[in-house]
Image (cartoon, rainbow, N blue to C red):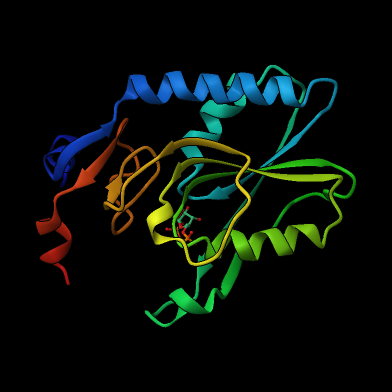
Length: 188
Ligand code: PRP
């Protein structure tokens, strides 16, 4: 059995501490609260990685709001990274027509997932559609994405924790850390 202390040992460097995450998410929440004043936004989170961010961000927003959850996955295989084909594993549970929708993501990497989701959600005729991402990794971008709120812009390193996984593990770490290269090199 692997304990989180052992998972932490796989982390080379803490990129964003629990405290840094807390402070920045409070700022993002305040910004969203100001921007959506008088409205009742719908936060749409994209599972699974954005789960901790969604949970913390929604509690930093001092407005009446609704949430909905989607789960998507890229079609497997190396070629799909450039195809941008995304499969919807869990769809919205309610209509977003005429709603002010804020997509909540943990990370934007190539941008292919959000590129697909933006088109998909625009088709549902929301009143407005914006993006809030905790992490942005612009070095890997393949398509341009109009990001409205960014927590942190990060370098092109393999990060885990605070929702982000490697092989479905590490999501429950309280910080965002850089995974030791030997961890993913050993399983390739
Ligand atoms: C991650 C992340 C984004 C996507 C970003 O999800 O949550 O949805 O990848 O990458 P992109 O910009 O290159 O499309 P992932 O598919 O790893 O699923 P998960 O959230 O369940 O870990």
